[in-house]
Length: 381
Image 1 (cartoon, helix red, strand yellow):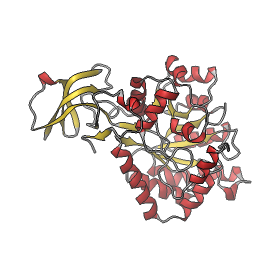
Image 2 (cartoon, helix red, strand yellow):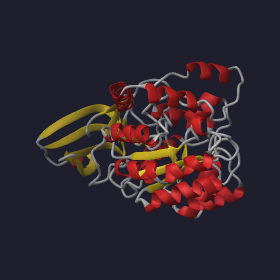
Image 3 (cartoon, one colour):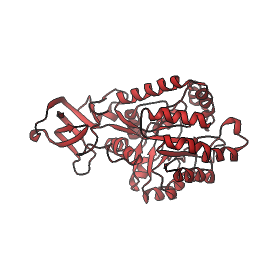
Image 4 (cartoon, helix red, strand yellow):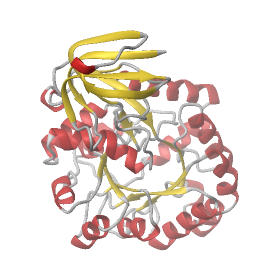
């Protein structure tokens, strides 16, 4: 059954050939966009939905989250607000809570967070493992993640678990061996926390080993890179052809040049900087250099417990010198690029009909009215 969506004051297609249309309409058929254009030229359809002069944008694509977890780290957040520095060590408390949790407890929280995201306009989400750090717990996390999204990421190389803190080589062998073999059937991607400045994460050669093993197992590559300080993560991501280098908080000129000359997306996570009092990434520098930029929430219990892509858009505009249009592109088409998807993040003909209606006449209100629940899915899954 086809549906004509009309009464659209502003339609942001994120399609290069269509751009942004005013007084627009589109037709959806079988879950896909079948026609886009001026409302005055709209074809007939089986049914009609009038959005009453509001804006319509593509569903947000949240390409970096950690949603399978148990426990609470609000006390850690409060400590950071008092001035304590984040170094990755708090992940261990989430690992302990997640290991102790029952499967249904994890499922209920995961589904609750995805529902929360959906209500705010997110229609595509990536979900990582990384809070189990045993073979059984990582497989469990990925099985659960697969229940809500095809975009699942094996992150056994999140940190070295406390029980193996003095035996890093042993844990790396597990991550690149038996754990990877068990997890790969449930994952599309492999990721690694490449952060030599943290005693808990992985250096360049350890990260390279994880990524190469993941690629050999048929997984695409993603990298947590340059979050806590300058380091090798971004250039390693580019060298190995990773789809995305995520965080990108501390970048050298060489890092920016490497990203600009590659297909690797720089995924920025401003909720982290908001929640850790860290410097925000320099999005303007990346965009001016021609780097493809995405925005994502990094929703997790420790450093960015927000599920709101509109909040990330507002932070990107206010704190990272992005224009409202650039921030929306990064939260939709940019996220799709980071997941190497061409069916989401835009509303061109043939795209998935992931329509989000804003309770506003223009996409500018996403940053203009921060904290106001403007975005609501209209059609789509």
